[in-house]
Image (cartoon, rainbow, N blue to C red; front, top):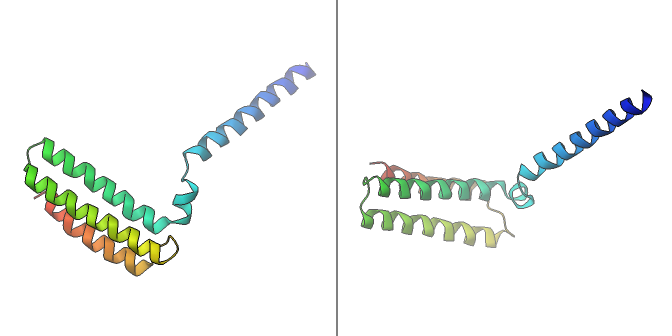
Length: 112
């Protein structure tokens, strides 16, 4: 009887530890934790990229319009990298606002 209780507690503990490891693996990476502003900007750029592709597939954007929007997004990504390079891998709040304003302009063009 005592052995059965110890055994079930052991399995429960192992399951809890493994569950904790699995959930921490799904959490943000170290880079994401140390660069939250860059992560936010890059997530928006990735989402806009998906939206451009979707609008192009649906025929809402021409090939030329999609190409131009991708070009603008690449320019924003290059600027984000240059800003981060100047600050040891980070961007300031002001730089994040600037990049977000640029992304807002592109975003408005996607769904017109």
